[in-house]
Image (cartoon, rainbow, N blue to C red):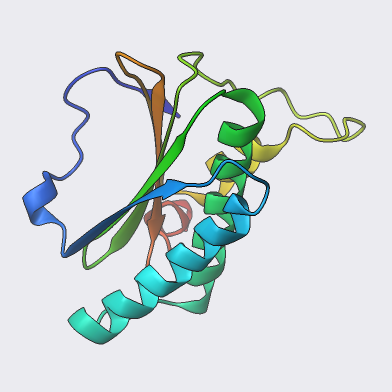
Length: 156
């Protein structure tokens, strides 16, 4: 996990094939709404740009969206914004909330119930960026569109 305040090496917005932003409602239904937006976004990327989106990438995107939006709703007062961005190889899930506290993944503890969300996100993403903002923070999780991630390839 990386935390950056300035240039973090990510692609400039004009290099993304598609971007979409969403203001999520304040109720518990916003998590399901966010997952729905993510699936529709990936479907649109497939149709409009002929991008191959693996089933794994679709499932992981929904999982990451669920975890990040759940954390934002649970720990931050106020609005939650989500942005989805896609290139030919990755999808970025960006969640902004109003709490400036940078989350930290806790040490593994099989006896702990709950609070595994950030651990899960770190385990299934290519990269994770957390940036403090003038108001709140922005968490960006990058997910490979193919079934074989670059971190899997590096381990072989």
